[in-house]
Length: 194
Ligand SMILES: [Ca+2]
Ligand SMILES: [Ca+2]
Ligand SMILES: [Ca+2]
Image (cartoon, rainbow, N blue to C red):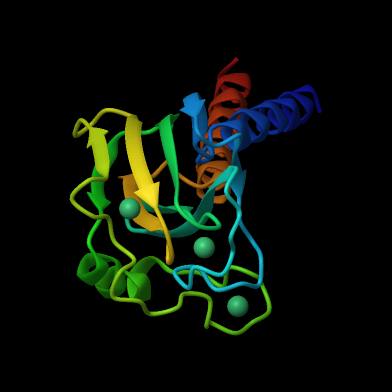
């Protein structure tokens, strides 16, 4: 019984720790020109330029494909506004997609049902959704921070940030179960040997 209780406690602890290790949303290290960084789950399609919120830089947690977690980051102000920010994604950045073509080509792989209504029509197709020459994105391959300096009018500025995925709590919990089983088997074997 003690072994079972030990196993149960270990699993609860492991699951809690692993859940905490799940992919963290980007956080602002510095931010000017926009008042906050917010998750977006609204019904207005991204890329369409209709959001018209000048004081929020938005992100969408997109799909995790293989070892890659995608984050969609965008700024869709009312009229012309600019935003400067440094964001920490808490995981190594692998690529940042900044062109209209690149965004359109990757939406099928990484896009999600943003507003959760069961219909996948959440990304408007716009030729101008990428960054212009005057917009900057600075990041280092393998670093976790992204610095942006954007000036945007409709349809706003959009990038897709691909970071190294942190294993999902579910798969890690299974691994924890397997490990717990092994530990228990080991204890039983030792108990028998005595
Ligand atoms: Ca707009
Ligand atoms: Ca939808
Ligand atoms: Ca721009």
